[in-house]
Image 1 (cartoon, protein in one colour):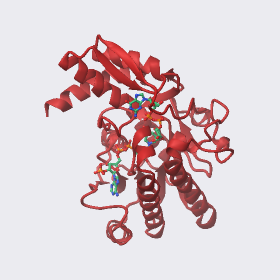
Image 2 (cartoon, rainbow, N blue to C red; image 1 turned 90 degrees about the vertical axis):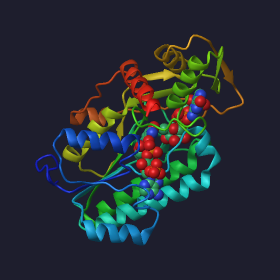
Image 3 (cartoon, rainbow, N blue to C red; image 1 turned 180 degrees about the vertical axis):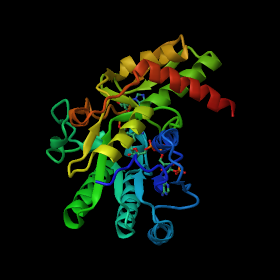
Length: 315
Ligand SMILES: NC(=O)C1=CN([C@@H]2O[C@H](COP(=O)(O)OP(=O)(O)OC[C@H]3O[C@@H](n4cnc5c(N)ncnc54)[C@H](OP(=O)(O)O)[C@@H]3O)[C@@H](O)[C@H]2O)C=CC1
Ligand SMILES: C[C@H]1O[C@H](OP(=O)(O)OP(=O)(O)OC[C@H]2O[C@@H](n3cnc4c(=O)[nH]c(N)nc43)[C@H](O)[C@@H]2O)[C@@H](O)[C@@H](O)C1=O
């Protein structure tokens, strides 16, 4: 395994650097003193365009690649745009992983998601649960693309002895999240809705589903820390779960976001909206055994994210 942290002038390509995850990884790498990051916006380099990706890699020759570019969204977006979720993600990851290999990248980290696991996987979910049962229907298209990404990393490791690894984060949140009213994940969606209700003086806020599903949330700064940790310490065939172990019901989350935002009205549940997976708590003991633990509590992370959101609205 090539050391990652030893040389702060290594050329590192962070794909998707303006997103929730990519921006936190760039911040972390800069804090650590890395000076040679390659960053391209979606407009500058569309990763679904195979020949453009090939030319970019041939010209830049990065030493390390962190793949945080993807078509991402919450339950509604996944359910509404299945063709885009499967096709765009397959294209991005296939182009980036293959070009990385062809151009001598020393190590690549591919990011998947906890939705790769069967809907009814035993909890907490270990890495071994992959491909043991049917997927959650609201996001199976995205999940199939992500499973293909894991398998591509494994295949290239087996056939070419190449250091391709995969990390599977749980539900993430933090600065630079997507706050779209319909297409975002639950946490930024509720933060925006409660904030707008507080500002307008609304008496009620609508929350989707029944409130009973359980989700595990991890602050994106913890994920960025875990990504750097895996680049340095992990080299293996198996994908690695990255979770916080902090599980709440959607109802508990909604009450917590309401408190942090300071909305004083009522919650109204829209049961016509899907609940999705009933529970997806990951077993992250493989990463813990390697020596990594998360630091940010859900409450502190929410306060930090809301502070960021209020500042972002002023821009
Ligand atoms: N958010 C979450 O809760 C979780 C995320 N993950 C994984 O983390 C990774 C990053 O997700 P996240 O940061 O939340 O997503 P974001 O949507 O915040 O960021 C994705 C980034 O990818 C870029 N991108 C998308 N399509 C293309 C393209 N065709 N060419 C170039 N760039 C592109 C986007 O640019 P632009 O906006 O300009 O299109 C954006 O900068 C993904 O692999 C996701 O599966 C895993 C578990 C949970
Ligand atoms: C990270 C993960 O994210 C997605 O899966 P998900 O965990 O189901 O994502 P979610 O954050 O959108 O919803 C979580 C729960 O929350 C409820 N909920 C309430 N009110 C709102 C609401 O206003 N918006 C949203 N989005 N959900 C709401 C919602 O009904 C559901 O019960 C995958 O598609 C896939 O992308 C993936 O891997």
